[in-house]
Length: 177
View 1 (tube, rainbow, N blue to C red):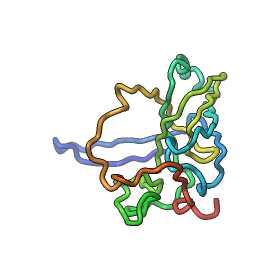
View 2 (cartoon, helix red, strand yellow):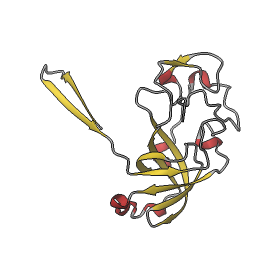
View 3 (tube, helix red, strand yellow):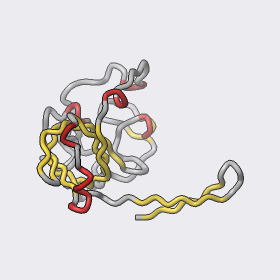
View 4 (spheres, rainbow, N blue to C red):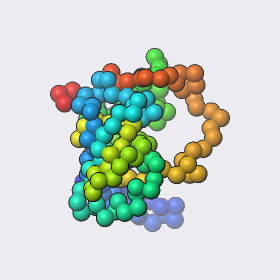
């Protein structure tokens, strides 16, 4: 898919940008419906899955086995239509979509840190999956604690609401899937 957006740059010149995403593979998980799927990988209780990288991208996996964790970037392909305010799983109140982790986003892109268990050719066994089976994979990045673990003094409405074992109930899944 190609999306072209026109905008004026600060210098007043017209700029055109093309955005194109093509899946590089897919993610196999035990979750076929949103209902019962962990809402974040930290709540996935070790749920295992397989990241299948298309053969034409398999060479890009060189040296990946040396990492303990990976970031998976994927398309949330079965989410309901985008919403600007949502009542997320950990709240009884509506919040702006950008203040949540809800999948009902204008650009339904998800990220999850997973534990790498093994690399077998173009297949990566992982633990901590929180996405649906067959999810299109957009990218893989190494998890590097020096880059990815940052202190935060404020966590907004999440304060005091984080708890173990939270799963989805299907409220953000597209009907009919």
